[in-house]
Length: 481
Image (tube, rainbow, N blue to C red):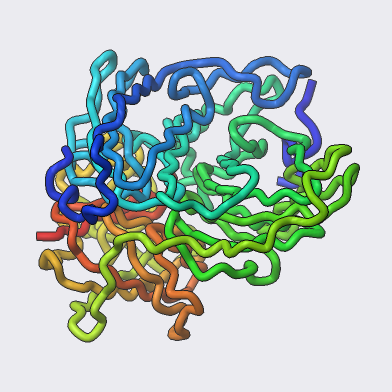
């Protein structure tokens, strides 16, 4: 039986950073109980009872993995036992952790071998919506289901009736609901990445999310897809953005009413349920206009929580992130190159200039500042920091401004580990909110300027979070020393 409708889119180490936690955020009993995670094979019901279960790779047998919730200032201790038949790691995306806890194989830790356990320990410096995923062969390990949410709650959160997290993802499924095994296909690597044909919310194809008239919901959106960019519209509703990539932002309605999330990005919304009992309203994704589809419906139950949603303030308290001093900043330029329909003739690979045709034969298609990190079958599947010289070295405590230029025909969500940066400008125009982010989307031919204080020492990954682009060479390191 073929999959149909929106199921198949037929159109298409704790020392170091610990001292950065303000004393007011350190509870008397700082150490949380040890959490455990066990990545391994599992079977889940992804697309409904009419189809077979899907074989996945999952944390604790669940997709997404267990939602970890802690309070700001708490210390986390997470024991990861590898039940896969291959090595893995866990990266705590967006969290400012010590370098040894960052989960990058061969750069910050040895990969976790099958049946071995690695213990991660770090402080939750910042409140917000974060997530975890492997950084070992991540284009396949994440694509098969290894991801989960890590929520750090504010000491004084905004009052809402419900706090929900939607982990958005997609899979490339065959007619029997099994995952297609064509990971690392050069078409995906050299073009827009592995965009699936089945879109899920919290690991399942959903038809409806129940809501009540008059309620206020905090909705945490996480894009855990390999390559899909989401552009969500909540019809007949006016969501308010209160945080981006976990960090507070001036509350505002999204431009044009659409929330855009590139891979790895998060957006926190306050969503007031202004409909009437019995109403049903649609959430659509029209980021790709020729492939717009209905994600799910908000279904109003028969009762009313209150006459109308509350009008209490929704501004979040700031996180303890150091403000960049632009007057004393060191400045660097970064150019993103490569891919099909681009102008890059070749790049440096392992210290040697290599033409584009040879690169493609070796699984490489992308470069940062003319250097490609290697193909999907090299150096641990394109994720490893092995033998990677830093693209930049920044003195500890210095403010750094990076001007990034996307000289390719494809979008790139660029992610910096270990730090949070302000997005200063796009194409020379100052941004409205100077958002704090850890992943910033650059459209084709776009130029973006970011700034951050390099206050977390170590060698940090800097890469495109379209995981096929990362695996095919768009990855480097930035050293803070």
